[in-house]
Length: 282
Image 1 (cartoon, rainbow, N blue to C red):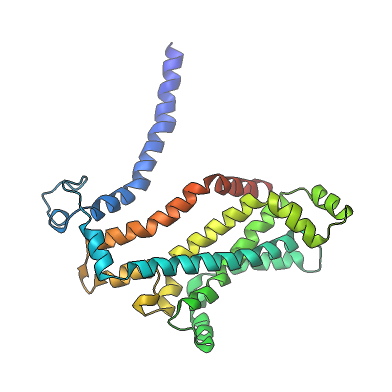
Image 2 (tube, one colour):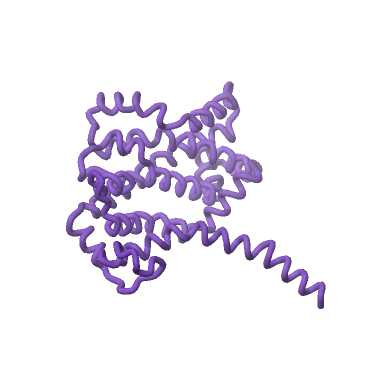
């Protein structure tokens, strides 16, 4: 009996208590953001009001946000840029990752290492030369500038992640398909890609998230309000000088967080499978 009680107590103190503390630490900012977005301005700025709860829930902040800003346009821009850049990056990343993982050619290992080093280069070091490229292409102050520049760091990331995942897939099935008459491309499409779906979904989700949250390029290349994405529009359009519109800021931040949260909720199984398989078998 004592031993069972000791095990239970050790599990609570060693597992559940630290886990609960971590969850409170990680989720409290989102909780604060959510309750602040449903408070009225008098309650939000009242120092004597209960800070951790909503006394009179209201949609006032959302009505003000939709009436006074172009938040729907910002959401559309974020979706458009993130989806298109993730698609482009995955198309090139799958081909490059498969070639580096399966094909033997001179310089393959060095090229794979160079791809990884390219991903490690901070975006703040290359946004100035990329700005010159954007200007020369006539894409300044347009969301197409982001579509052109985001793959510069997304393709190396997708390629490096998929190299590890493709290497975890046995070559025997692919070779059997080629013996039965499949070409190299046919074997890749019919055999390898269906088995690599978790890794592909994992890379696509990460690419989408990186594009959705990217700030430096979006701030540098776009100045027009209608062309901004959520990551830039929220801090630049809802903070004017020293005036912080906290209710609208929290409401916009909540709207910008929900799509990514839903994405990870629907594809969590693929995300975990792709993360562990690529990390452990690559």
